[in-house]
Length: 131
Image (cartoon, rainbow, N blue to C red; front, side, top):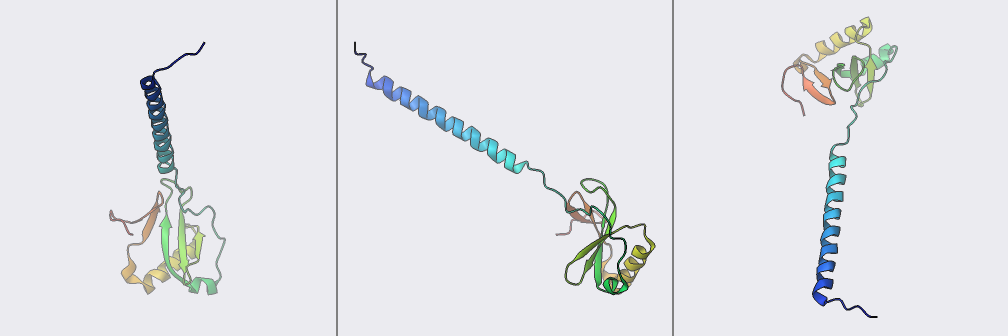
């Protein structure tokens, strides 16, 4: 027994399968795209402090920025930037850290106010964003 299926029904079934595949592919693509855009970015935060820096190393400090604990960073820190871009995370409560900050401020009085790290962004201590 041979069953004959009309050509228009075969074409309709093929079109229906193609539409289902295209819809499924589109939904999969949108899902992957939304997951990629929603990925969490990790902040560039200090996780621990250096105990001390030698006087020679301190002389190479050219700038600093503050890290606060609101958002993604867990510890407050003063991040000193050296001449060649190396950074040191320090405890803001240490006396030598405050003294080094004061020395840098005296050398660079035009750089006030210092930037602060909040949620991975760098902001001045006012409301404007630094880029």
